[in-house]
Length: 270
Ligand code: DGL
Image (cartoon, rainbow, N blue to C red):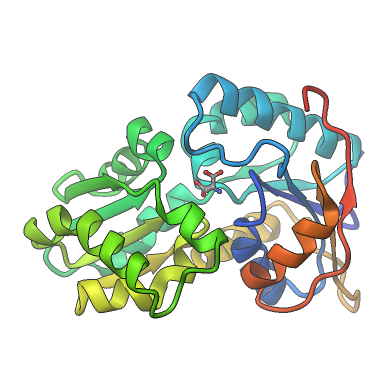
């Protein structure tokens, strides 16, 4: 049985979800977090929805055994294709990143023309589009899959890298032609490309759903009366399904600070 003392499970296909964990840990400093990165099977964004659902349920099974009090799906691809399955399987609140991202975009747009970028699986699912339209069906939404961004970020080709800049120009051209004024960064890796993207889109508002997700998690915990007790010190534990040394090395770029060494876990199916 879980209680307010129990940890919060956070998971992603790999290290990208650490951008979400960073926002969670800073907004909820008294909480204990268990982060799982499925580095043995990353990327999820190029896989079929069936595979992503199966992998996600295997991680959920692990988190269930750890008696978490809530699960944050830090991966956009998983949030796009597996949220209903996870909610059916887990007996605790399950929160994804798409709904909060859509809400932030609605608050930011002035012209009602919103762009969305993400992995192939996220864009094909239409989940962001649906989430935006559930909030306001009059918004005009334009989507573009940007599959090369994930490997470029993992390679560390961010900042002023000319190759990344050129790739960004090509991917974003069709969205700029639609005169979007807001762009949802619908993938865990894209916040690390903010400076490159800013150069390409100029005045367009960039939406990073991590902070909005953290706020949604806090409200849900408050509402359910399961916030960590006052006076407790929070902590983050890290687990990966492949080499934990590699996870830790790559992870600090996404987490924004050093992280405790990850431990390897065995997920069934890996
Ligand atoms: N975490 C994934 C997402 O946010 C990106 C990496 C992957 O494709 O697994 O969609």
